[in-house]
Length: 81
Image: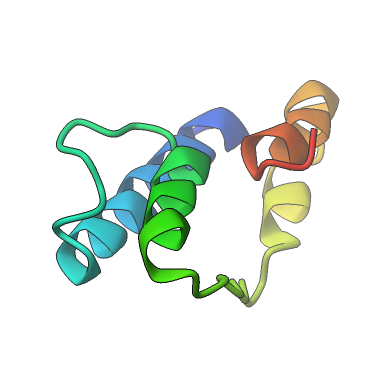
C-alpha cells in the first residue's frame, strides 16, 4: 500500500522497469530508473512499439483526489508532459 500518488507511481515505474529488464535483459541498463528511457531503449533495438493497457488507471485519481499537483504530474511521469 502506498501513501501518495507519487509513491504509487514510483512503485509502478520500478515494477514495469523490472518486467522490461526480465523480458529484454540485453536492452535495459542495470540501474535504469526511468520507465520512458527503458522503453525507448527496448524499442531502439526491437523496433516493436509498446501498447500499455492499465486497467483501473483512474484509481490514482479516486484514491488521491486531494492531490491535484500529483494528478497533473501523472501525465509527465508517463511521458506525456
